Image (cartoon, rainbow, N blue to C red; front, side, top):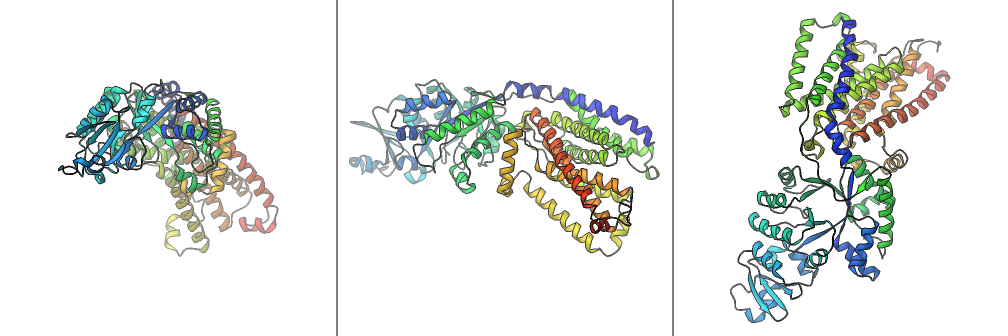
Length: 640
């Protein structure tokens, strides 16, 4: 029966890979067409660099545009900004700005004075739309607008867009991004009316980037998103930033979303980021995570003028991205598309492939009956096909495929009579599983992270445990599972268990979390990115593949002599750790926001770099066997 099943594994594997490639056609086409990056700078930073350099704003902006900047953002002025004098507008109360009106019933209301040179039709209509009931007093040098709020109510609320920025930027042919502040106490309809006026007055306004802790218009985003759709504006979605209402407005704006990456001054200080590291971090965001907008800021912690260092970093960033084929422009978002039938077929065939492959690797004497196997295959097929319509089935099958795919790839190598053939089959298994997951889940909802894949942690945790269970079933350990559980534990087993639990905790905790990565490892990552571009994952090159080659080497030595108990434990531990190579590779395909060609490049780099370190470890192992004490620690007798 096992021989019969093995005949089906290779055809199923080949069919899965072909169907996965065909299922990725829409995604690959869009990723190829939209290999663009927007280099965004804030108006306030351009103004600051112009002041430091003693030049006009327009001259500084043209200098930056010639250097590669492709868009400019400007912000809402909150009550706190107006109070602090961030514009030529005077802020206070009606009593303070117009003392003769101190007896009016709303003399303590918030008021702002707009000079005549800025007091045009736009701001009058804007303030009346945003604050119904706004009163206007004409004075000799401008107008005083009295708002139906007290100043303390508007400290964190967007009152008006930066009027100087609007005046200057409206005359320039450069894409603009508006950064609205929270609208506490303002109805969504009134906020939408004022936003409509802003779009109508600035024809180059292309994107919205909310600022503050709460997204403007929260909780009713319908009117605001309606205005954005009316003018074809996109929502810029900051990475690693959680705003109240951020997820809701992203769902409503979909698919008109562009991911954005930025680094704050606080991050630069807390992590002590150097300029090259900072630039490489931006390049990494575009390469690895398909971030389409990079918000660049000058070094506020450095001595001025900032423009020299900013231009150097800008040139370095451009060179890094240009070498990888990126173009610099304000791009279009991904269109919405559904997975095709090839993606569903790939998902189905890889499920059946794993089932048939794992069944063919089982013991003949404990092999399940044909009836049971067909029943299991039917259940797996129903789940795989149902995953196209049911999100719950998709989560279950996605986690199942990722975890058991990594396990199957590991077993394919460890159980192969010819290691190189086994390694080829293991890599092809990873490729089949990865392409199936990428084609099935590689739709804009997952690529923009509105939906998340739930099998990443399971893929790291389950394969080592499955390898342990497989090896104990195969009696590669001196005792059966039941025997080990019934007797008191041995200190060596307790030590290995502690190491496994600690390693699992570290791997799961560090997975995707930069704050838990030490500085030396960050420097190593930067070095790999600098020379290999597609950085292989540390789990593959320092744990997985070295452990795999060590396990194969120990297995070769085992054929000449029997293990001591410690030797059996070390061999088992190496086999378990080797599963991390394939688990990490499968997880790379589960990062659906990363371009598919980059994922394949990364997996290939992980294979050869990890194998290089693994072969070094094998050489050291055989050299260590020449030491009698080490040989006796692992093997019984003197045959080795």
